[in-house]
Amino acid sequence: MQSRTPAPRATGRPRSAAADTAILAATRQALVELGWSKLTLGDVATRAGVAKTTLYRRWPGKNELVVDAVAELFDELELPDRGTLAADIEGVVLQFASLLARPEAKSGLMAVVAESIRDDALRERIRCSIVERQKRLVLEGRARAEARGELPPESDPSEAARTVDLIFDVVAGAVVHRTLVSAEPADEEWVHSFTRVLLLGLMGAAT
Image (cartoon, rainbow, N blue to C red; front, side, top):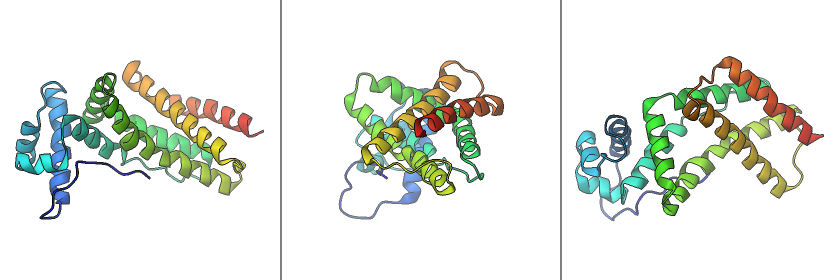
């Protein structure tokens, strides 16, 4: 998986994981309370209890910091092993919907997506730090389903990669639209129906 890409580290004392955690948590808190436009690195440093220089050694600006703060939340997602592909999908989609209901995730994601419309570098950071990293869930789910015999193995690597991209786009797009755009609940009933539609497409593509 691709890893987060904060600012190049200066030589000297090693980075503190505790400081990183505090800074990212403070960033999410500031986003909820202040919004994107009023958030400053100075305020984040104060909230995290670190010097501004400590923060700037890690992140060159607000864009990079906020993306990494949001990415840390998405890294909490896990694919549960519920015994079937359908149940696994339902489990991770429910997790995703629950995550998007959290004020810090909602505020952060909406802010960086809005800003990325006019910032190509920010859009690329979102792709690398959030989108590409979370495709691990699709890869894991596909491999598990193949091992169970629920899906045939992909013989063409390029086609397999396109399938992963498509599945991720469909799942992420549907859940984000449902929860953040339509402001409707992605509850168990909706997730069950969505999973059935998704699997109809997958099974159809496999035949």
